Image 1 (cartoon, rainbow, N blue to C red):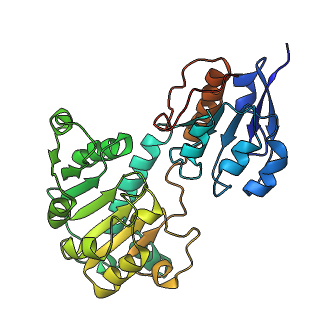
Image 2 (image 1 turned 90 degrees about the vertical axis):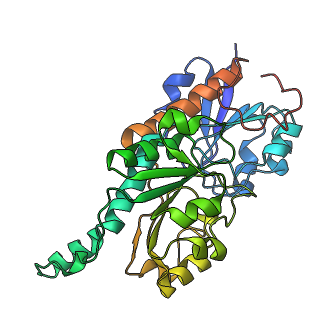
Length: 328
């Protein structure tokens, strides 16, 4: 019996994690493409594609070149770089790996919150200058009893909220997509509008998915609705925040600070943001831990295996667009 073909489209240069999962079922090809055009010559025989983030978008052009393709697995949480509708119209199921980095991103969000509030970077820089003084942390407020607003209470938002409760923060969340009762199950407060959350939160941590509804969700009006001196944490997606409005809110002094791991344009180029004294930055690394990275790759391969075996995938994200699925 001939083996199926799984194409790893981008990012990876080796398949040490994927090979054991697919052994005996599929051979793996590494395309190492950086664009849809570079991928074109590799897709004709691909039955499942595992896609990372180097290729900006997979469109109908790719799917039409891949008549044997039955599934696309986005190795990660976000799937904005796959045209889900175009894939579904061709019977191709699109899946993601929604849970691999839950702990890491929640930990990172709390780390950024603490770093900004406790002026970690300023204190470190002061000591490296040979200083030994209180000045860098002056006016840093007590954490316990202050309000953390969570925007988006899915897996990562929930994990962040539970960590925040251990620090004595009063946690409130806004998520119009979650059913009633989640607040009771988690022991959190819930509000029904973003405005209500922004008006009371001392810290705002973003954990929502990027789509047409959340693009620039945090804009000039949102910043104006925040309490003076509030701190913004973003480990979700960069375009959820209007970067120009963010910089204006920082420069006006209305926003007390920010901890940012994701950016509207990556890597960021605006020196006003990169050099702002009240901002702590990390280079889109909140998702990463050695164990989590291996988990992401393994679960991507396991999803590809299920698809090739004709089993139901665990995490499809385009069922609303999917015509009868192609068979492997």
